[in-house]
Structure formats: structure tokens, C-alpha cells
Image 1 (cartoon, rainbow, N blue to C red):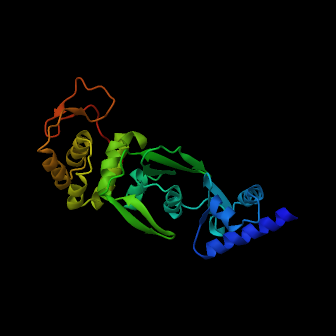
Image 2: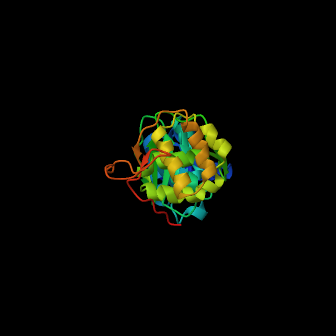
Length: 271
């Protein structure tokens, strides 16, 4: 009887949170708001609510509220809770790679995986109800190249088109390789500003990444103005020959002298 009372009380609690526009809560908040109930009793009722797909734990101690319109999916879109999750974790982040590219209009490569950049320490991937969140570690979250995007639940931090382009090349192994990166860049390049691209080049980006990006922009995508921005930046730098496809053999291939790129693969896009 007592458990039913707590269950009904929690059902009303999450209904009130949802009415206030909140689609999440922490176990700590729940315990603080209900000091008369034991942690074990509260967790038992949460398990019952979870079984009915009314709430879902996506990180230890952090719960989502699943509105009726999302019950069939059993989860809400990540852009509705990511910012709140990282506020709970007290850590910087930004949505990047294919997830950011899609928000900039590069929607040709739709995937069920979500990509979030974080600083150290690493976080294990989250896999719940058909959604996989990949956490990609950077030593330092860059100061420039991140913008706030309005969502139904508030705002979310995402890489701008220019930083997304750099990350696609730098972390191509996380998204399926250089061909996929080039395919996404084809669409994304329409949103890239030469002026903003110039701004982010001071983000301590590896020169080899810029060489590959510049080569693809110029010789694969024919985006000479964007390639020119990178070429001007590299003109004062000492660069070395690097393979277009990292981790692949380098001997016996022609070298593009403009970018000092060993053409050890032929890039093929879906366009």
C-alpha cells in the first residue's frame, strides 16, 4: 500500500515537472524533494515508472521524463536532454561530427548514433532504447567554433559548420572513414563561411588535418575559396608529407605538391 502511494506521488511529481517544461530530473533532486521516503522505496517506484516507459535512466542518477507523444519510441530526442545532462555532470561539451552536420543541413547521411565531444575523463558510450551516444574525448574543448542552437527544451551547444568540417577529418575513423567524411563535407560546405573558417584555425588544429581538409576542399569538392583560406594559413607553417588516408601504406603513390598529401586512396563520395 505504501509503495503504491509513493508510486502515485512520483507519477504526479514527474507530471508537474513536465508541466513546467522539464523533461529530466536527478535522483539526488528526487531524494531531496522527498525526504520522508527512503531511497530504496523511491528507486522501486522509479523502476515501475520505467517499466511503463514514463521515465528512463540515461546516466547513473539522471532520469528522462518520456511524454506520451514519445512513449512508442521509449526515449526523447537527445537534443532535448543533452544540455541538462552535462549541466548535471558539470562538464563542458558540444555536439559534433555527423550530429552537428545534420543540424547544419547535411542530412544525407542519417544515423542512429549521436556524437558529443567532451574533455577528460572519458565516458563510456550510452546505449538505450535504440539510441547510441558516442562521447569523443578532446584534450581541450575549443573556445571558438561552438554555437548555441535553440531546441524545444532550451539550447544545446553544437560545433559550427567550420569546426564540424575540421572534426570530420580529424575524427574520420569515428564516422566510417574519409569517404564518408568527404560526402558529409559536400553538403556541409554550403554552410561554411570563409571568415569563420579563418577564425577557428587558431584552435591548435593538427596541420595534417588541415592539409587533408584543404586537399579535399580543393581537389574533390572544388571549393577553392574555402581551400584558399587554409592554404593561406599553412603558407607560414612548416608542413611535411602526410598520407591522405591515415594508417594506410604510403609508398608508391603520387604526391600532391600543393598540400604535400600522399594520394594513397581515391576519395569517392555519394554525390
